[in-house]
Amino acid sequence: MGGVELDLREARFTHRETTIWLGAVMGGVGIIVPDDIQVRVHGLPIMGGFGIEGDTPSVVDPGAPIVHIRGVALMGGAGASYRARKHQEHDGDEE
Image 1 (cartoon, one colour):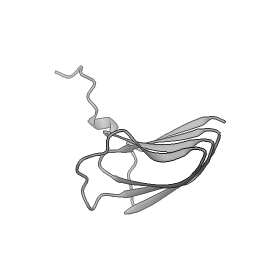
Image 2: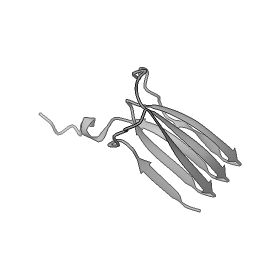
Image 3: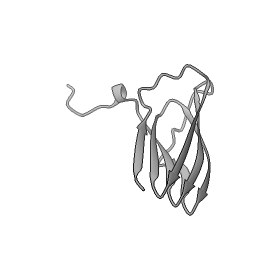
């Protein structure tokens, strides 16, 4: 009956594929992933949803790490969203 946000933008992936297992009951899980990896979402939503939110990168290196998001959501959901890695973000104060 709550939520969690997992930020993977500074993660270093040591294996080609990584699986995140999750369970959500009347709550949500948001996973922020860097835009230089592949994400595959496979889940069982019961009165909820699993998916990728927002825009996906138009080009990803075919050799890029793959993160699988798997699990069950009961009256809740799980979503992944792509963002630039933290060190690549621009705050507009640079000259």
